[in-house]
Length: 95
Image (tube, rainbow, N blue to C red):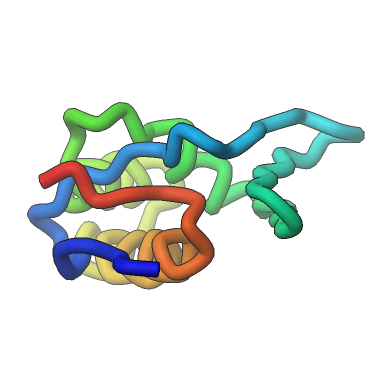
């Protein structure tokens, strides 16, 4: 699968169109074909902000405010998470 452009803090990420998202017993489940992921609280926070307009850096800044960590650390964690979701085909890089 071609992942498209590399993911950076300037990237704009959106959810893939062929995924299913469900809240089940307090957890957010994201499924695509034969793969299902259960997102933890922080991953859910990031995933819910994938609107196809907000940059990874902007999401990192929101995350830093919510969880009282530095914006650089939150952005780096967001890049890492979204890179994993990109590799699984759960998200795509819009810009």
